[in-house]
Image (tube, rainbow over the protein chains, first blue to last red):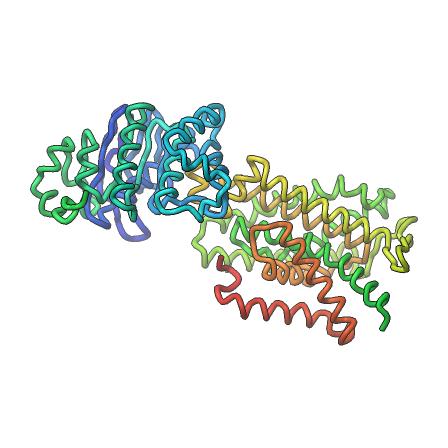
Length: 239
Length: 291
């Protein structure tokens, strides 16, 4: 479904991603883990079209994404929930959600999607007239997920959805990601610091370090990988 | 100084201020969405004024009716300016973008100013229709008809712009791009088109203001700088994000100017605006370009 091959990505003169390749199959949850600065976010941003690779390719259902502007990539069914959520803070919850369905393919399904999303996140319906910037951190994350789902993606890219959230909320967010995958059949590529939770959820995972993809396997394999064990001992105690 | 005299002065301030508000709305739109200060905005006001002036002088088209021509014409001028010039700096980082856009703006301002002198001389021009001298008297207070119509049109334009930004998909896209252009891209918004539309709308608003200036007051090739300055002061005063807020900021400036003319003499009119500007900058430490 998604195939990134030999991606080189730069930030100015610095190379952030080195010959990275990864794959996401239909209906799969894939985790991308690794320390801070490993290039995980850059890789997601490159797939979403926010950054251009210097070389390599990204193909998604026959489309060469590395040649397309970001706004068209959404139209093909790839939605990114970026780091820091990037809500339209001065606009209402409702406006944020409706902007999520800006593309032609999403607009046709808008009302149905909205109903489904407010079923999973009733709080978004209760607060639909509230300014997004005034929501709590967990509500903002729910809105970010809801807004991305409004685009009717077939592949959802999530960048650190648990960042800054309480463990009880994190569990809920992960449960929602599972539901999105099973109920809607949406494939998920997940960048996550909460390694244990991510590897439990994912069927497969990639380990990234220093801009390189250094490991790959099923979630359980990576969970017992020595490098992961030693690097993430701290995180394993969380949740 | 009679109460009536004071009230009359405030009315003139209000009528002028509405045009400040209209000119500022256009500047604010470009500033808020493109993060670019178009210092040639006043020259677009001037061009709009000349368009209506010549439509009246050459073919006798009523100035208010001529908006049907002037507004699309200035919209098209905006499209051209953005496509040809401003879009080239849009992808740059913040600092080079601001600097380069200022250079483009100053260059355009000089070019338009001198072109207007060359084509149309430096003379003052005003549109004198059969009803230009008509004054409505209400409770002893004078309301020049053309300026009153100008107020109504300015208010209508701002209201229409506000509804457009709040209610339509294209308007929502403009607001989203102003808040976070990268997030807007992730929604599937083609932000290059949003920038283009915002710039063209801004130009059309400037043109509308120009027509109203030419019919209610007078124009000449040199008015651009003054209008850019007034619009900038209003934008700084009112902040970004709310068009009605910008409009009322313009009215506030108009009232402040007329009041000061009353209190300390009309020679200090321009000074008052600049003092307001400095005061706002002093209490806005994040500066002009900050949120």
